[in-house]
Image 1 (tube, rainbow, N blue to C red):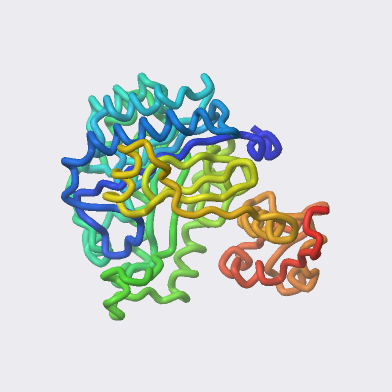
Image 2: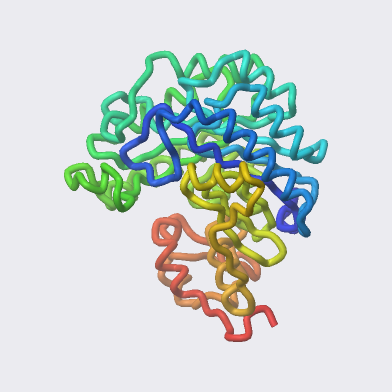
Length: 369
């Protein structure tokens, strides 16, 4: 699917906020020890979906993405019911984020039969001391059991999520993780690698001894980029690499300005020029959704220069880049961007300094006019 088609597509994101434990770096809307609320939460999602389908701007989606949290904690029948309620296009990409520890064969088989054709495994690292630094618990064998479940279900298009730059992670630790990830029978078609970020209010934030070193993170990024290129995966967004044709259509559509409807607590939406966000707190969301009331927390409508600037910042992160006339040409001389035809695309160094490059965007006051 080309960029124009992706930008014109419609997707649905479902936020599943349940986790068995909370990672020390996590600032997402997630809750532990609330599994007894799953049935009620899914009923609330089904109600919100029904209301959303009556709204202007709703279209049968070409992508569905279950994120969280840990969507794989939901029983398969709930995931299937949500997919059926959304009624996606026949050729839709349907992704479910899974933790290896909760990726069971029967669950994956059931959701694959319902149309799930992409799995994203939250691995983060294959070294126990690195996971401990992140506040995660290692479960021996879970990764390989999850892979067997995914392959057996016939899903060969899968992603592995990694986090790099944790204190205590050595170059050889990251290299060994990549060796193990790509040393399996059916290697991933997609890999997401995120630099460890300190979010305010998290246990990681309160422990300066575990704050990452940005220079080391840059070195790790270069190692990842080089290794993935050798595996046939190429960057298409700063933190994402894929084999040709295996890019995540849902996320790429969002980066290209496509419309999507978010369902669930804290979920964001972009429909008809509006950007809006659901209630964050689980209890408040459940009360509103169960009562059939609006779950909207805030909204805005970007127009003109503000809308163009947002679109350019998002597109700048992608391999397609932005029109050259929106960037200062001195960035080419600085080695931060390269010119490809009439497009400006981030170099490897530019990807490491993307926020600084974005400050060089030149947006006319009239925006898109």
